[in-house]
Image 1: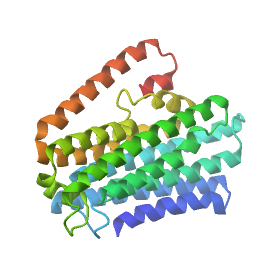
Image 2: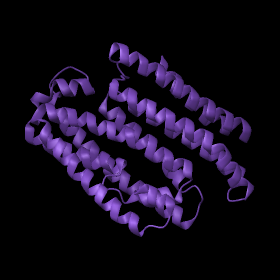
Image 3: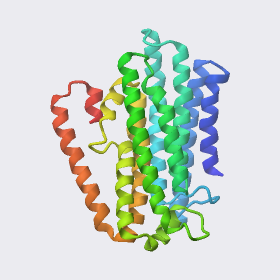
Image 4: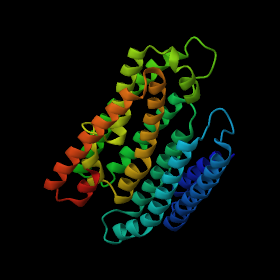
Length: 302
């Protein structure tokens, strides 16, 4: 099964620095795992383009949206893996960090990437939520990577804000389940869309607000964006690329899936208008913030 190949590749890449404690082998395993994810993602995308979806078992399902996200994440993961090698070699050469910290980075970042891919392909909303929570737990240690007061502060800010956001997203998800609680079908994305007509429109609207705020925290929509400038500027540069190029598309994809359920219940105007409002607010805050920011990593975060 193709998705298991990606998971196995990242699991092995996470174990290599723990078992071998060799930087060269770890670097090779990281690049190899990312290339495997890229090849498998292209293969899955081709399958989806021909047959419409890829669902080897009920637990995993990749549709057109999932295939696009997989391609984006795999490309970013491969580019980041290639860039991380010279980046951390320079960091150790100038003694910013020691070799053991580099090994810790590679172990945690592959747990992060494995969780991201599983969240993308999960056919159950709760499973996707659990896996996004796993990305928070693995990436928080990477944000505090340099063990300085400012990095620890940024990590705590990231952890608290995202934990609260995901808690709100979980509450919104449970509200959607009122559509299928009386049926015998598994609560999958497809089941939610099929039974969306059974959701009270008012409940669907409330649920989407919670989901938008919750997963919007992961995406970085204003005003839930306050963790991003600190997390991006204090963490290693490769992690910033993964947070923006890998984690954000997955969280936004989950948000779009809930929007499809909401649209089937109350029409497409409600979710569309909310996304436009939060999107414009995010652009305005980013535009004015960039004028006063002098740190390039903070600027990119905005």
